[in-house]
Image (cartoon, rainbow, N blue to C red; front, side, top):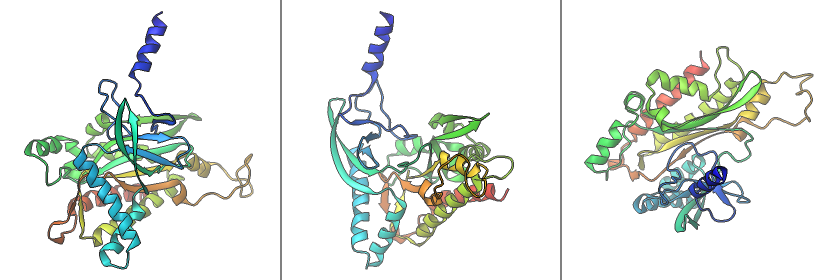
Length: 319
């Protein structure tokens, strides 16, 4: 009887999903489902959707701003003969692909979702980290109360580095057994600068002696520098409370670490290793607080955090 009551309690706490959809298992940050609040909606994934995730629109003004941003990238890609359009077309390479909007019934309510590329598609053991960029995470329309709240979040790292760590998941091998580690915003809020460095070392599977994580770090660094190049040239937009999502496949990292026999991995079918950019992806995400750049000024706030992230990854490579 007690077991049945427990099972009923678990079922009642689960969100009511449309058929063929489920909660995104690799979500590490952002708004999530809440069993005590039916209106709290997290990211979804669906069977047979070709590597897509479904992001709820959220507050109308924020959701419309994000949709407008994605649609402006699509327009820029189609009309890239103009300087502004050319910049937007280039930015589209550094964000998840956008497939339009979709309405779904979740918890007996209709919600609008953005259909986006699943950046972990094809990864057997996806490691995912959300890094929020910039000292200032409140936008120009924020109330004084909102500004005060944002200033207190992740205070130790945000003011020193212009970086916050809302969450991550990483696979690690311990005594020949693979385990999954997940950390959320409470962990991120507890970090000082040294702790932030240690969290990144944990995520990238950095060890005392340099190993195959060097391939991972070099590719992450290459993609971060490409994004930095775009931000140095653009004078169109300022990004507030936007993140970088860093994803890689731990299984591919393990494959690099296995000893070769006559140039091949033993006991495995011979297959060419995928290029690093096929299993390592760094993309800009979260665009609900994007605003035109005042007086065509560079986005120094974003670039400050991005440069510090690059410096940390470089220091891991040069250790």
